[in-house]
Image 1 (tube, chains in turn green, cyan):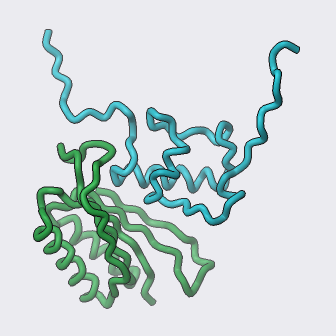
Image 2 (tube, chains in turn red, cyan):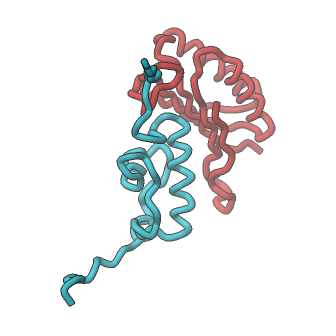
Amino acid sequence: MNMTYETLLLLSPELGSEGSKEVLDKLTGIIERDDGLILKNDDWGIKELAYAVRKQSRGHYVRLEYSLPPDKVSELERNIRNTDGIFKFLTVKLEQKAESDIDSKTGTKED
Amino acid sequence: MAFRKFAPRKKFCRFCANKDIDLDYKNVDLLRDFITDRGKIIARRITGTCAKHQRRLTGEIKRSRQMALLFYTATHSTQVHKRTI
């Protein structure tokens, strides 16, 4: 049974459009390899950060919404950690559409 | 009595009153209402939020801080303060 998750990525602004596309393609590949499905790819663009992260005051936010088997999330997060150019990320379990009685939001990760 | 000229307005939980409010770490403008301008989370004694929603609210504020959407403190500084003596 796949669960829906969302991951908010904070990418380095120095990656540029090609670099960030490369990172996203890599993550998309990993999700699809693990029997997942990308539901939404939400690009917020480059935003001003509330505080400097790795001496950068701006960052590129991308929100991914996907369904993935629960045991594969740690595998995805491991890959995120190993990827260069990702400053921070946060994975949140979304409310399941079919079973609304499941506790809505659990599990956070931060770099 | 000289003090207490008017009765304070009854506080209410904004999230109970309006179920459509999306309490989420991405909704930064909403979360900003519940922190001071120095970044501290305002007590529910002051805002009137109910216990259930205050618990979720603090969680979402902290998530938001992790992702640099909100600040931890107003005095985040990019440069290191070097003291010259």
